[in-house]
Image (cartoon, rainbow, N blue to C red):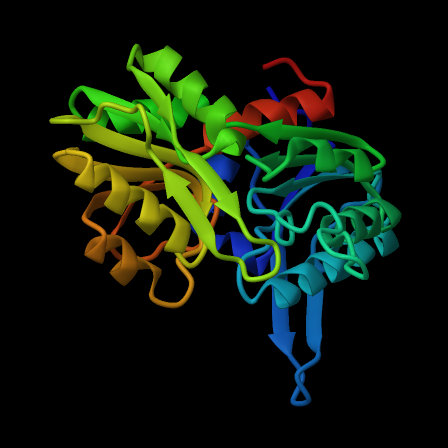
Amino acid sequence: MIELDLALLCGTMSQWFCEGLSRELKIEPLKLESRKFPDGESYVRLDGDVGGKDVILAQSLSPPQNDSIWELILLMEALGEARARRIILYIPYMAYSRQDKAFLQGEPISIKALLQILSFMGGSSLVTIDLHKEHSLMFFRGKAYNVLPIESLSEKILEKVRDPLIIAPDAGAMQRASAIAKRIGAPFAQLSKRRDLRTGEVKIQAEGIDVGGRRAVIVDDIISTGGTVAKAASILREAGAVEVYVAVSHALMAQNAMDKLKSAGVSGVIAANTLPPKPGIEYFDVTREAARALREALGLSP
């Protein structure tokens, strides 16, 4: 049973999963007042005593990302002023994670800046879901947990797709894709991908992969504009796949991403509940796996 010196605070970018997290952790969330001043500046106010308590602060850094980040910073400052003992961050979607190195001279390492700010603001521990590159967590000064939702995603794929062939769209997706294939006892294959750093153009190949008559599931961390996944799906369909599904941890679905995927012959999109729900996507819940990591961060038994 969770101790009484714990509190849960959900930012405005957590409304779609806060109730489930509260239920899983058996903690009633604090009330939060959040609004904008007429000039566009943000205002937040906590309703409740957190003095001496360990506080789990939940906030997804979903679009508009900069607003989500600034609200998170204000909430951390408010918790510090209220004398919270520790701040344990649950950030299911971590914005700026794809800028994890300076690809061209003069660029910032955006995820480094963000994680260092969160450390400076008093974050003692951090739990996130499927960070683009796990090594980026070295920029956070406290204990950090990157949760790959293998368990919940595997269950959803088995529920949705009969006899799947798991596909990694590139080498970066191989770890999660191969782990899912192993868990559900499915065959696994990897596409090759190259991106031009200046133009952003992506070239994908499926040489040596037999997908004829198969139901392929492309497993990746994120769909942004959908261009890369759409190309991969088109190649798989051209190679003989009868159905192509896409399964990701984060479905940003920017611009006309869904239209691109449908045009490429994608049969369905599966995504974790790390971002606000959008039509046309089947979601799976990562709360159970996140709560497990949060309990570990708090030093509690599973």
